[in-house]
Image (cartoon, rainbow, N blue to C red):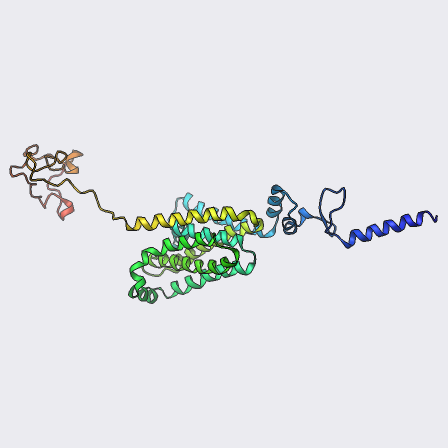
Length: 337
């Protein structure tokens, strides 16, 4: 009996040592235990421990309540949009609102860039600051849009409003390149610029009568794009996200430059060939048509060609149009099929 007492005492000491250090891996054990639970049952602690593989981190993040709620909201939004576009019906103003937000492609990209910043945020307060900065600009802009927009038009900014969307995309891409400390301050500022831009689009496209359902659903769709993807990404945040975020930021900055350059390219219709008096063929270029263009009604057989059709004008000019035969000039067709 005396020989067994030290053995029992050693067992009690081993049990005490195991309970005193629950986070220490057991020799010969394949899993990490924390207070009697495996690390994969506690996703946040398991990911932070750094001992899990990529597949285990993915499964652990997918089990979190935060991811499940965000994914449910994401699916609800996708199914709502799919039902609106897939079921033939007359669109209500509420539906037109969030569909309008999805149609502003450059601002959608800007909000997705900020959503990646939300996914990279280390604290919840940073997420709240981005969302609050966005709403703090959108809400007063839409509530008092007419006086605010009139003041903007009278300011120097009124002549450069077409640049607000490219600047928003540029800032959202730049935020993803900044260090974490600087990003805490830059991300809310970029969210405010994006909110200002989206409020201008919504305010100018609510059919001029301030439809509340349209504006509310448009803002709701913008918040869905801004917050939900980032909240889905937060359970998987880590150092691995730095390089993909910078790649996305580079794409956004390039897209902003392309959109800005396209705004300065003049859009002019194709001009007809001009006459050149130095040429020997009557002053017309070789590609110029020798006869006047056909009326579409004549091409479709709805009208008869005039008797003089096929003969070039004697003075080299175009014949005077007949106002009574051209509906584009305020008249109706004189001959009916």
